[in-house]
Image 1 (tube, rainbow, N blue to C red):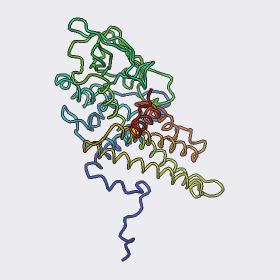
Image 2: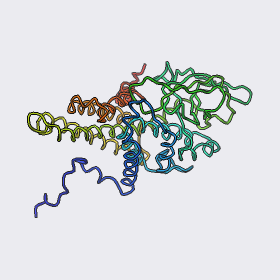
Image 3: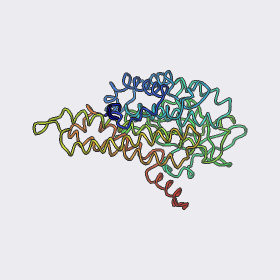
Image 4: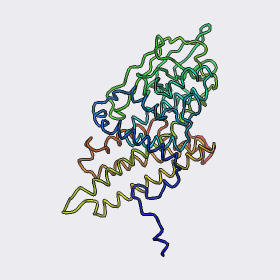
Length: 396
């Protein structure tokens, strides 16, 4: 018997056999999230995107809580305590449906819940985390400002002591989940440095007008946060951190999810391109039989599965407690950039149909334009890696 006869068949959906790296629990998590997205998102997402709405977001949040997808890599307080790889697999499946859905989960779990879990008091954890894990309370994360994105150290939002209270004033911009959140984790300048605050959104002076007229992440709630003399008790401050280390560590955790999520959008576009190439005929034959089309598909598959391998490697490092922020920047920079290129190439294969919402390609491509720049632009991640490689700081 030849050695080749014992080899497993080639799987076009998993050409490198990456599934062999996953255990039964990993696969169960992936399949659960994939099934949920197929049932609750995919039949409706084109309409949501076209209308620029995410109807029923609170119901969706509760459903995501019921399958353990919110704060899933955190432990205790009703969280699933899943591995980093399992969280990444969930992000991939969610973004294969739509980046807006993955953003809902990322902001809830990796930003708002993570900040409270890591830096909050026990009282804050008990108050917020169980309900957020169940999807009963939606959270948002207020860091970016209208004039300060890549330079959060220059934020103008400030918190001042007034007797035993804190009084917050300022504005935050491009805040996912803002207008539907029950709690906002807001970062502000204080006399002691940058501090985080758990702000109940029904506090007088807090408002979150929704941002419209977006051509990206249309099936996602995006808001401005306005803080006008928002008075909070002393125990609203997150006691576990002072300075930029707090919000930046949260962003690193969220960026890790993006490393996986971007590959979900890319996978969806590759699948659409393969299916289309096998059925679309020109010059009397399927276009998938032409060399140029096959070259495109091959290159797309190579970059997709290289990106998934990279995400898996970073996940194992995170599970081992060995993942550095520079390595997250490596993954975010590569995978989002390659995912956009895969989407653009898929659009060329689909031709004019590539811009139609009957196919997922243009929706993913426009969504990824936001993913490319939020939680660190391409240039910022290049400079993170540049500094790590040279030891020289080129940020200023």
